[in-house]
Amino acid sequence: MAGSGNSSFPDGLREAQTQVYVETVHQVVQQLREGKVAGVKWNKIALVGFSIGGIVANSLSAQYPSDLNAIVLHGISWDATWLYPSFLSGLHLPAAQIDPGRWGSIPPQYQTQSSREAREASCFYGSFDRGILEADFYYRDFDSLGVAITLTYHLVDAPEYRGPVFLGIGDRKLVVSCLMGDISASADMIVFWSDDSSFCGGRKCIGQPYEVYNRYPEASDHIVKVYESTGHLILLHHAGARLMEDSLQFLKAHGF
View 1: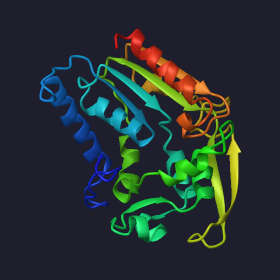
View 2 (view 1 turned 90 degrees about the horizontal axis):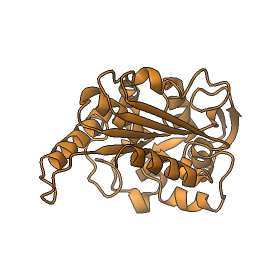
View 3 (view 1 turned 30 degrees about the horizontal axis):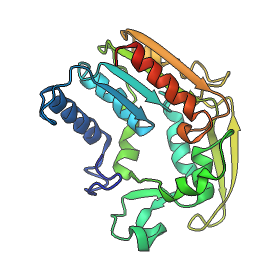
């Protein structure tokens, strides 16, 4: 995706938006089906999306329902109330401001978590090895302002999609965080976690994540897996191996 990893960094407000990601994936899918990649025509395509990637997959399946033969969603919910508390908990600042030596050339519209504590608060909970936190913080990616503003518009219904859908999600997510101190430094934080968060699979989540049945009413299959004592970055929790096993089993069951 533009603005992620080693890609170029177009305008982080006007160009690096969620719809651009959707169109990019659509074009890749079309080229795969037409045999324009390595001369091989792909007849069956599954898309696996985590977090923002899952939202892109949801929007793609609504706008281009015939693009995909299977969808695997990791760590998303259709209750938009979780999104901006999650961003706020990360204390996002321009990457160039956080580490000028490493990211000084990146435009200011690309932001990331400002401290290890903020990253942990927004992405981790429960059962994980604390040794992973340092590597995760070092290799974290960026979010553009354009995506942050537009992604809630892509949590949509996909009534014409007829393939199978898998959703895997942790049972504990951030509800809200109160910030104290200078946010440009390593701020002190009071973080509240609860089963009441709608961005989770807990007992009190008001039907989330089973909203997937309503969002994909014509899907040929719906599989929902909820992982105990697990935060947003599921793959970096102890439940990550089970998530991968469940995802692969789902794909195998549907001919992949």
